[in-house]
Image (tube, rainbow, N blue to C red; front, side, top):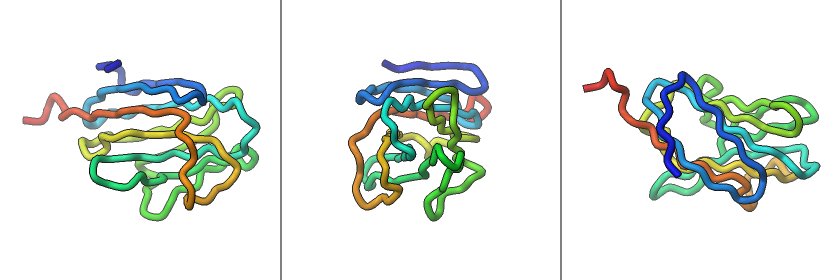
Length: 135
């Protein structure tokens, strides 16, 4: 499924059952991705996979401390995770660029180490198109 949306920001939602979605956004816009947590895990991890590169953990969100912890080299000006209503974690990606295109995953598990990749709970293909003002 491919969505082309024109709102300033969009929000996608899913549960932890391996759901896959696709979204296309314009450069310069933002996107919010929502991951519903059905387990009692305190941590939600957010990953990005881009062609010909290893999956990269961007950050994790800890419910008990209401805190997101960004991995080394990840900018808080670009990525932010926070708790939504109920047991949901939201990932905000700001000021999208074409280089942000890729597959984003969320997963809930207790460890906050990135040494072992968990089973992906939500899979989002994000395609960032050139802004309409670009030539």
